[in-house]
Image 1 (cartoon, rainbow, N blue to C red):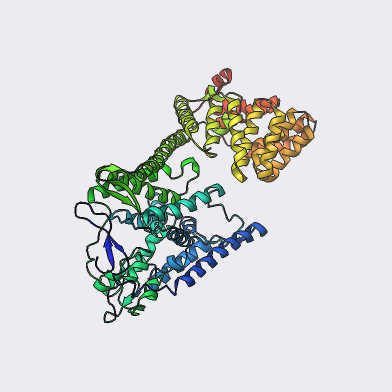
Image 2: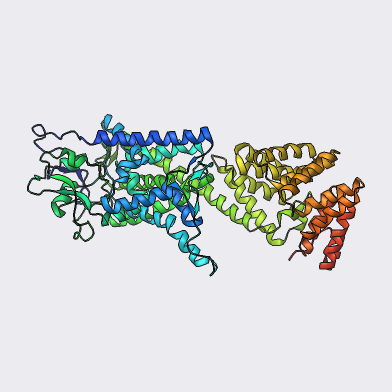
Length: 635
């Protein structure tokens, strides 16, 4: 025992110092922090303000944009100045002066971690820090990926006349507060992983240390800050009380001894160490920053160098496996899961290699024999890591299916021109459709959850493959789980396919649902008109096409349909007006004319359809052969 610390498990001569009470603890107990109740009150107040912010948006429909650092990405990429960008900028500027205090006093995830650590201590479990040399760089690398890489990528790819910094626009008030956040069903798993799990396995500030990208920038700014925890060395007796109460896993007593201040970038200026010092030797003050304070003293780490390299590989694999799987798991949650997975994987390796191993107060292995707690730990680790591997399998197939979907080149307009688009597919399209169906099918068969973004893509590939009923079913499943614009699009495509199948009443129901979600969806108005026309409700059909033209006067197909309807009713002058409007907005593209002809043919407007077929042939004589085969010429 030295400096108020003792060693935990030892292996090959290595040890990790853990803060404990000094020998004379009974005579000189650690004082209760006078600051922690105030900090708890601030963090509780912050949480209540967040709840009030969300409630105000739900009540009024409009509110201040999220005060969340991740919103800064929208500012950097699109120039949309929001409350999150302003907050993050001010927070970094303040950190350059006062050090990393925003994390300790103004972060809801820190509040959650502190609550979890407090609950664990109430049941006699003190979270122990997991110390890694390599994984501490994850927050900074993630921050660079989030906030620097998009600007750099735009610099590489943007045209020469496009500015590197986009034009700024005001987005301080929003009606879509939750648009950039994950679904509500992810919130509680997110809080559980980033709160309890990271604290339980990685230490009181495990998420901050190994996952938080915002902390990556705060750590850099902290090194330049003159404001730090400092020491009056004449008063300091190196009792270790400061280290014992630090919830940021900082060896305070060692740092103030070696440097005269706390240089660890993990210090969040909670001020507990200052508050409990029995000699009032610690204080917050201004002076030289930690940058250039001298070579850091040797530290004890939880892993050997070979284990560090293995841990980095495990972390990267786990992060890839769970990030955005099912289009649900957000990046911060994925980082938390990867951190826990890395700890468990390395602990399992140690469990098999070590003769003795403990976890908290539980003996996992003693004398080379696994104890009951060891089997329980091994079972939990196998379940957790097995779910990681399963997510990786699903994610691989989802990603491969999405790539194949993106590589299908047949235009939507051509695919929807007839009931069976398979005859118009190129060889490459057929290969990509088959690959996409195979991968999406594998992901769906193995998945524990439904990927509502992948379902419409899977449905479209099924439609292109000639399985229209299955496409309709999959789009219905997707729409049942979606809201807003995604639901509107799924219902639109479902309605369009039902129109091609001549199931007009069902098509009408789908298209009405799409327009309820997105009244401005022009294509849904046009398809709705087709369903009404084929049901004999011609006045309503013309009204639907007029709605489409009202939203987009350049919509050639809707104007052509109105021209055909006017001709059928004997309103020649009106028909000529719409036909001219359509002609003015129809490009000199033979394929475009061909598709218009097919669509007009679907509703029995043969005269107008023939005009477009002839124009396609005039522009490209090869379409004359295509007319006989009922298959267009494609480049």
